[in-house]
Amino acid sequence: MTIKAINVRNQFKGVIKEIIEGPVVSEIDVQTASGVVTSVITTRSIHELELRVGSEVIAFVKSTEVSIAKL
Image (cartoon, rainbow, N blue to C red; front, side, top):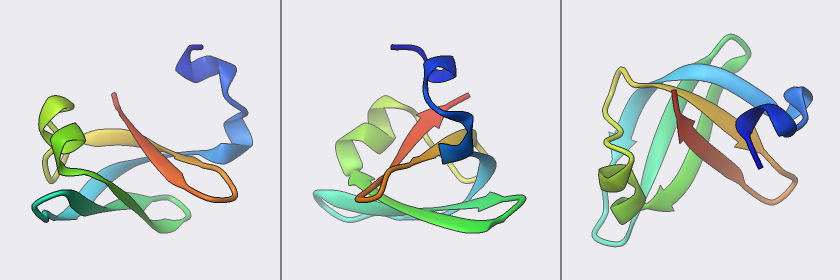
């Protein structure tokens, strides 16, 4: 599945505003045109995706979670 295959209404393009890194999971705040979206993802994923404050990302929202993809 590609990013474009996901419903556009559930996507928020933005820039990482803050990362609060923990030993296993971390919190990412993404500044979007609609406001700040927060996601909790594994710290390992942050390192594998090379996410940093200022990185452009897309926040994917499901009823139970928010996922992050690096642009």
